[in-house]
Image 1 (cartoon, helix red, strand yellow):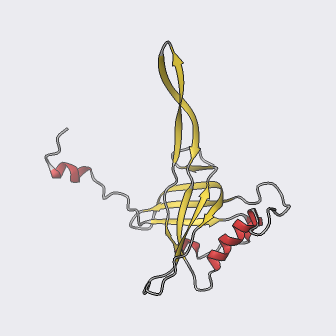
Image 2 (cartoon, one colour; image 1 turned 120 degrees about the horizontal axis):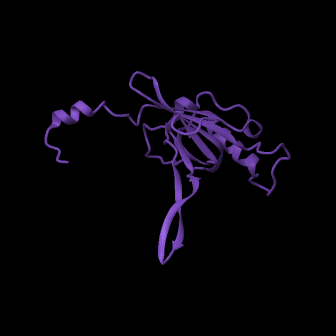
Length: 178
């Protein structure tokens, strides 16, 4: 199909979803790090809508490989967070991570099963702040609390760091509701 008439494009284009219109709410592991910081949804500078993959399962049939759906996997999910002066959000993630497996010895606290897992909500917003789609990211825990770059010549910026979570699964309005 040739693209020759911009008016046809504009008639079919609704303005598009904007990547800077989102909200991330974190409900961390209650036993792992205490209450999730309320300011997280404001200081979460960057995120993504989580990804998943259905890998093909190859079945041989009469000399030919036939691909059928295999297992679904959920990719790790990373958020970038502005650091606060008191480092409260950074300390929250460090505590959560340390409670999973302590930094100085190879032990975990004795608590109920799955105490280390949290969940998050990623909401896509339109320009009027209305939620257009919601993703519930379930069974998450931090696998990496990233570094904070420090430099004498880094003026007029706010510190930030990345947190990578492993994801057990997510749901959205288009998938089975949770």
